[in-house]
Image 1 (cartoon, one colour):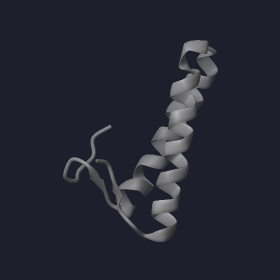
Image 2 (cartoon, rainbow, N blue to C red):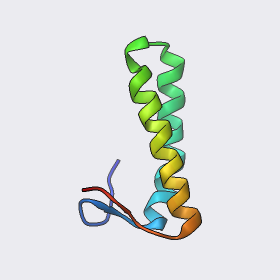
Image 3 (cartoon, rainbow, N blue to C red):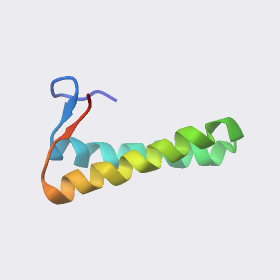
Image 4 (cartoon, rainbow, N blue to C red):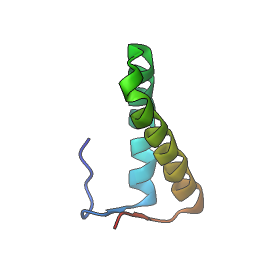
Length: 64
C-alpha cells in the first residue's frame, strides 16, 4: 500500500481509501487459516476501527 501523504500522518480521505484494501487483506489472512496470523488480524481489525473513526470525525490519524 502506498500512502500519498507525509510519513506519520493520514488524512481522513487517506483513511477512507485504506479501509477497503485493509479489509480485503484481513479477509485473505482469515481464509489462509494460519494461526500465526491471529495477532496480525486482530491488530488490522483495530486499525480499521481507528481509520473509520477518523473518516467519520474528519480528522487525521497521526502515527508517532
